[in-house]
Image: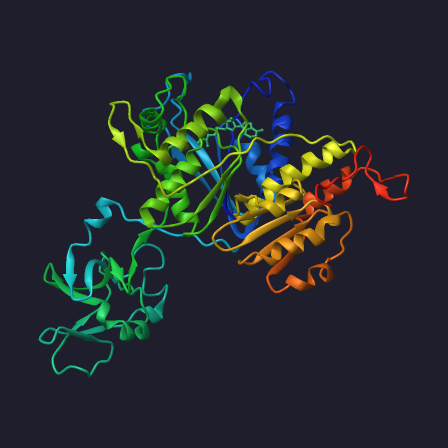
Length: 498
Ligand SMILES: C[S@@+](CC[C@H](N)C(=O)[O-])C[C@H]1O[C@@H](n2cnc3c(N)ncnc32)[C@H](O)[C@@H]1O
């Protein structure tokens, strides 16, 4: 799996670790450590992880993440104001925020900007043939803004009022104004651009008369060459759309469950996705709770035409998986009537399926082997995005030992016993699309010769390492039957029609 974005969201929960327990931090850390190491492993090289956390464990978690991901991959510790008024239940300070820690897997993560806010858009009040723009002074402000700080950025700009043109060369115009960068105290300052840059980007300069003095501005366009101006996300997020109240009231329009009050804001997660994903990213939220990450993913796909995919993992504490996470996202996809009885259209071009995880015993039995291969088949369907199970006469005779699935582009065949490869080849002969084949087999024999007749349409795929290891570990010991043939511990492979 290659995840572009991973989210983890875990609040300290004294149901798991008693507040009085002297080892509570270390128990929590060892719980998180295992999960974060796995998460890092699943992340794509350009991927990033967001972890929501409150005061209880933020200090411990920062150190843990520095250790697991590396200090140099720390991106930010966002402060999210989730309760603007502040909570009244604290003795001294009204708690108004929690945090989101952000780490990248390597230093290859690229972030996107956010859309400008209404008050930022108001600054783009000018227009010319290139489009809408705002003016930004060309004189350097703040640090390093004195002439002696950057002497080569101090130079006169020659402005010809008649033609409205500028130059850095003294003799270009017959009669012109000389503009010098001056600080507010009258001393010499400097420009933000070098002479060369200014010569190249003259079209982006506007000179205005202000307080009887000429001032030089850069024209910053709202959209240039099809690329819209964006703004960086700030390290503190304060907006009513990010609050728990906003999130809860929107959640209740979908499921009016008074007992459930703390989902994350869809808008918050959407903004995190906006800065961290591209249109076909794969997201993983392994503390999914009420499933806000999936809701936000679908909403963002609707808004920007993306096709991001999302995997959620959650426990079923207080039936949160079945009654909240599943139910909420089902309604979001199919449509629902809100708390006022109004119909809300579904995000119908989405689909989702859920799986209940289960343990497979470690004993080397045929029963365990069957269960493992069944569960692994589901995982391979997810891996290949290939879910439509096909049954036909030929497959029926293989009694589930060969499974066939298809999507628009490929077939995926899963062969549970190598003894049936001949049957598999016969089935493949009649298939039109390319076929990806997975074979459960104790050895690592490539089977290329066995598929010789159909190799042009077959791709023989190695089982993912984790599945292969688990499979090998529970393979029943071979027994020999009365004819000296290998059989498994409790059953022979029987095939009808053979
Ligand atoms: C703070 S909530 C997540 C909020 C969530 N992102 C949302 O959309 O509202 C953390 C969730 O993680 C789930 N959880 C707790 N322990 C877990 C575990 N070991 N594995 C998976 N999920 C777990 C809980 O059900 C809980 O709802």
